[in-house]
Length: 86
Image (cartoon, rainbow, N blue to C red; front, top):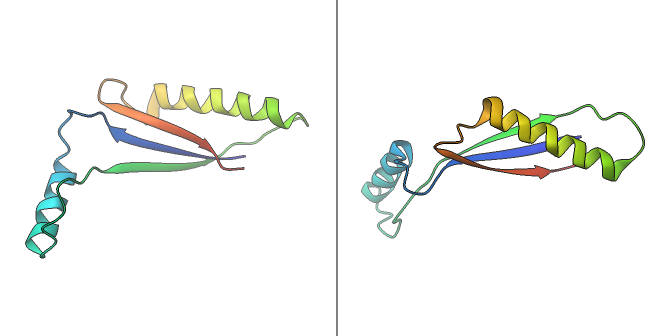
């Protein structure tokens, strides 16, 4: 099963890469850009066993949630979104 995880900094946490990108866009003449936030995306393929598709999605979502908590995201500064792609 393919799962997409989007990780971004929480509101209020400094995003130097986003700020530098905004400044560069402004210098290039895109003066209407007022903010840029960076997002890191992971696409993870998870092996699913058994035929219960609905139950499998819930198990995979829980497993990916644990991946986020243990490695992919820092809960102090990051928020994340998990999307089951199929």
